[in-house]
Amino acid sequence: MKDLIRPAYNAGGYVFATKAADIARSAGYERPARLASNENPYPPPPEVLEPAGAALQNANRYPDECSMNLRAALKEKFGNFSYVSGVGMDGVIETVIRTTIGKGDKVVVSTPTFSFYRLAARAYGGEVIDVPRNDDFSVDIGRLSDEAADSGAKLIFLCSPNNPTGNVIPKNDVEKILKSIDGMLFLDNAYVDFCDEDYIPLMNKYDNLIIGRTMSKYYALAGMRVGFGIVPGWFEEYYERAQTPFVLNTVSMAAAAAALRNDSYTARYLSIVREWRERFINESPYPTSGGGANFVMFDVSPYKGDEVVEMLARRGVIVRSCASFPGLGDHYIRVSIGEPWENEIFLKELNSL
Ligand SMILES: *Cc1c(COP(=O)(O)O)cnc(C)c1O
Image (cartoon, rainbow, N blue to C red; front, side, top):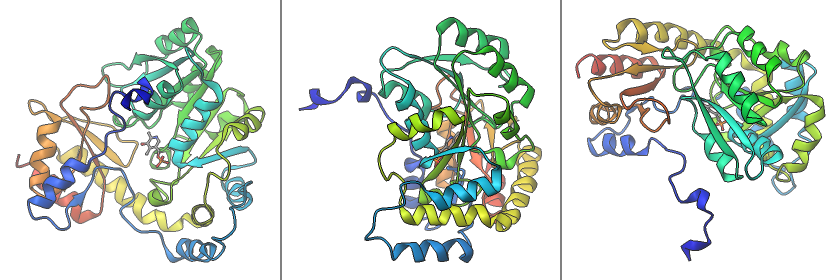
């Protein structure tokens, strides 16, 4: 029967950090420090949970297919642009690819970076062209633009702040890319809330830019699976045609709209991120990269990333090995900033490996 499966799925899919959690559990840690998935460690506040609970009462009805409430909240917060939504930003990425990419179409990815662009593009028959970043993980703008132009790429994926390297691409550089490409730029801003750059004004000037955002990190709604895209006006209706009907559920939409209207509670989280990001960088015995996201990447050589993940898991700290990120060496780990007690244990254990 297995020959029924499409070749795109013969090799491995998305890599989850479950192995480390298993190790921590068998080492006797009921409540390990969970620093592998870049989540907000604090649960959403009552102002978000109440409307979500109330929405549950309408579970017998299909959700609002226009996401009016969510759309209104997005416009209030980010301005009068065109918005699309999806099951997490992963859903948005997948739908953008489904809207644009068919067999043999070229997709340029600035690597090392988030792996889902590649997985999703390949699933639709896209041909992925990796354009490596510089040694310090900054983007070689000329090279990225040239590869995009030479290959006739329809889509270019650029992540800023980048996962897993954490660095921020200056807005001017993004603008240079937008000016030089024929295809569309998907700018993944999953972590933009944790840095000082604001790319949204670019939406006023370019009709080939999509900004991807998520409610999973800063807004503490990873379990609700809501992502959105700020898209050029012309693109919205095509995206809607490609989208699965009723893709966002009633409860998730209510939670997301409330969180967007009520993000004051995230201030505490942001200040913890800023404080501990500095401490991770300053108190690490290993070189670090990043400073724009809610995580830091560590170069743990001469150890391998996988080894360090295992060692830390045995001490009750779950972090992410970066070995599965194509184009990155095998000697990096990525560590989310969690609650202070979690950060404290991590720093202590990292310093005593
Ligand atoms: C977490 C993440 C996403 C997607 O998150 P969702 O939970 O699907 O919204 C997208 N891009 C990057 C770089 C991420 O780290």
